[in-house]
Image (tube, rainbow, N blue to C red; front, side):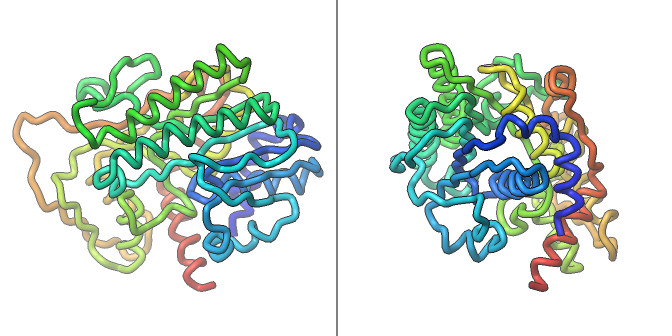
Length: 345
């Protein structure tokens, strides 16, 4: 069902895959939203280009992933290594590339157990970097986050990579953003002192197959309601700005940053096309059959500037020739179609 998306990814990354020919890559977080797209696109390229590459994926629960994506869990070129990202036993042998995508982007965990969130991010990154040095990896990709910038100033329409903002360290809910900042600092240290090429992708918001529809991702909740022909309810005033990059484009960006990005140079990853939450809900309603109602429960406060979480992506576009190829309405339709197909399996 993802074949068109996977062809799209391959079309935009085809020359890059030669770097993996006959080699091994290690991935943490390979069973989450990002990870599933990395596994899908790796398997597609590996098979069609006859790369003879192998991927080893760290997971805590292979049985759960097998139920989620049986076609990936049974592949002969993808192997699974059981362990916790904070203290996993190093797999044997050499690996040329490491992708560290393991972080549970859980608002609930961040709110209820910020120390656990912080510990998982920092210790997990340190462990993945130590493994990269041990196994002789040449390149390491960290999936960081736009949360490293802290609160985006309302007058800043797009936040660039050179913005020196930061999360509020007096607020325990900053654990996720602070953890990602320290992870980037660790990458800088290993790049400068260990000679490891560390690539940093500061990721924002996304939509696409494998995105959960029942967690804290607003657009996922909106798609769930629209698919069930239920009204979309916005509990706030609908004014915060977000932007959404389609998952297949996300995969293109991540692979390109790993293979071609400059070491220790962060790249924002996301869409630079801002929509308010209310506009996002309206876009979901318009893109899917039925045209459900959108109900905004609160009115905007007079004179209050809206919150923003929208990246400037000129660095990725100018240095790596990356773009947003899939428009939001099509991204919404493909996400809903994939989830509908999953429900019928």
